[in-house]
Length: 207
Image (cartoon, rainbow, N blue to C red; front, side, top):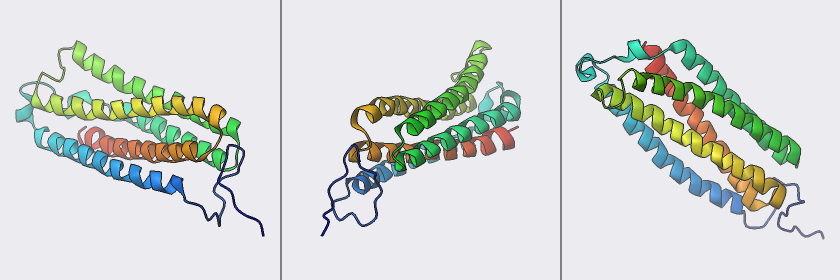
C-alpha cells in the first residue's frame, strides 16, 4: 500500500487525500485573523472620512469634488484589478508546479501595482505642492490618511512579491512557500476590495 509523504520542492501540491498535518491551512487560518484586524482598521478610516467629508471640515480648503478625478481613479481600478488577476494566474501556475509561469504572473502583478501607486503618489504630491497637504484641513487629513494607508499596504504587498520571487527558485513549492503565496493572494485581493470601496465612495460619490 502506497504511503503519502510530506510535500517537497519537487512534489505537486494540493493533492487530495493527503493524510499528514496540513501546515498550509493552519498558516492560512492565522493570516485570516490578521486580515480581520486590517478590515477593522480600514472601517475606522472610512468612518473618519465620512464624518470629515463636509464643507465645514474643509476649513476653506478643497473638498472631494475639487480634488478627485473619477477617470484617473478608473484607470487605477483597472490597474489594481489587473494586478490581482495576474497574481491569481500565478497561483494557478503554482498549483500546476510551473515555476516560470508563477514568476511571470508575479512580475506582471508587481508592474501593474507600481502603475497603480504612480497614479496615487502623483495625485497626493500635486495636492501638497499646491498647499493642500494633509495639514490643510480635517477633510484633507482624512483623505490623505485613507489613501496613504492603502498605498502602504500596496507597497508591503509588492515587497512580499519580490521576496517570493527569490524564495520560489530557492525552495520550490514546499509548504512554507505555498502558504506564503496563498496568504499573499488573500492579502492582495483584500487590497483590491478596499480600493473598490475607495473608488466608489471617494471618487464616484464624492465627485
